[in-house]
Length: 166
Image 1: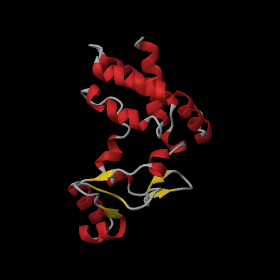
Image 2: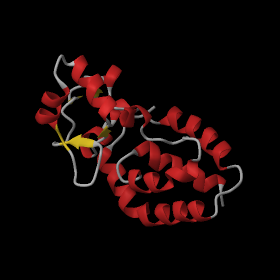
Image 3: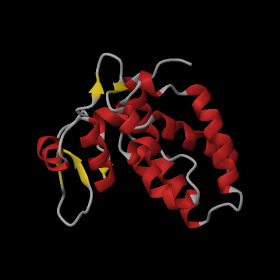
Image 4: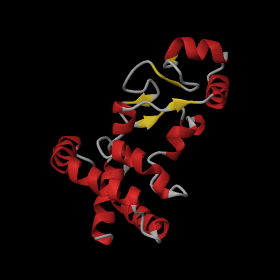
């Protein structure tokens, strides 16, 4: 497994983004019957090639959503009250029930190791990221269209799916 070169990744994204998004849109409108089976196979292949700890771009460029359960769990882990935790690190966008980070990169990212300092209690959104083989893969196509710009694993998944689904 080679480390992720984010500069090279960014260049590939700029070059292929429109094609990948178009492909995903086609899949969303007319999903193959075996899409979930394809996603299972591709997911296994992707994780043979991608090492998240050599990247952490999701933690550097994106923010997870923090549900009320996430806030309670993480605040307790940090020996804080949920209100104190929210006041210190989160804000709630208008018309949204979830909370997001006030800063990027994520305050819990250790930049020297690319590891999460609250990994064992991290938000559910982080635990599921990048959602490559969620049941009902088609329901996550819009998420993948966004994530190809940030996540080499998602980019690799789409690349592999394009090889399989002509």
